[in-house]
Image 1 (tube, helix red, strand yellow):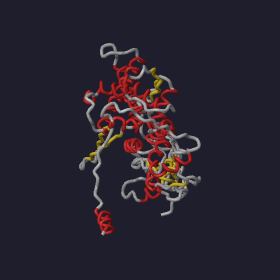
Image 2 (tube, helix red, strand yellow):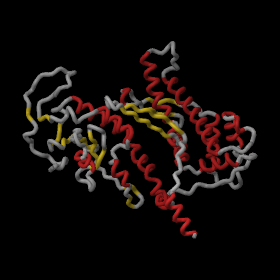
Image 3 (cartoon, one colour):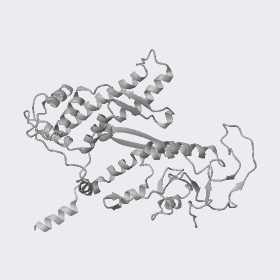
Image 4 (cartoon, helix red, strand yellow):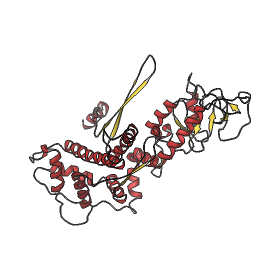
Length: 400
């Protein structure tokens, strides 16, 4: 099968027809303009599947190229010509790329029509079956609606895409990045911590947090932005961004900020973490008796307590922006706005942005093919360790 280059202009073909002008109601889902129409639009577009796919995957990144993880000078090699399938939301590199994953996805789609794609850089819409460029003015309204949704989503997500890519690739390029940034970024200072009495488990956790550069950078960002927070609601809510004024951090969060700042100072001698430890003991009394404890449990208690303080601070700032409404004084519209801003706002605390993961459970009905998804946040997750018997056997043979 011959497929033409989507980036080149092509003459109209007999597969597409020119239809006379027919008046329609504004709410009609039929064609709304005169011009060339594609017969595959009705079956090759699924708005729900596309929305679900872009919420779960990196934006404007070929998922297949990302799996290959090719690197050049420590940087991930990813094509910029990305096309999105309007049937399932698959993002693949275009015909001009080396791998042509978008074209391979279309050819392997089987009976399902995955022929209509859109460029995430030029917003050109293309049909592989017709070998033609489509227009939102000549086809069904659903095509214009999904393009409008994708463009709005792109304007919000583009800024953070590259940083998310680097986080996925940092396992492989961490050493090269340290060498490259050695001139521009000075190594973090290392200070000892005073043992308060069987608190080695606590000191070990805090030394790791003090050397977590992402946490340090985000704290500096919070400091630069002062007490203002800009909340971007979901696109479904159709609400404008809201800038809120945050109150002072909670006592445990303030103690953590002070501790991490003190760890960056160049003063000689160990640092006493007594203030931070006492604040943590007020949230988790189990650590008060100065007995040996599990370091993972302490980290869990610390992050969860700080996250709770930050969540309350953000929620209070949102209520303040709406003049502190209550269940009696707030009308239905205000309640919906507060709920929409609160849902996205609480995710913007620095604990969620660094340490919180999301476990997605997907269940599909075998009869109606309906898919339901449940997302549960987690701070840590237990993974099984599989014994590699082959390696162990080879090691034993070498010892013998």
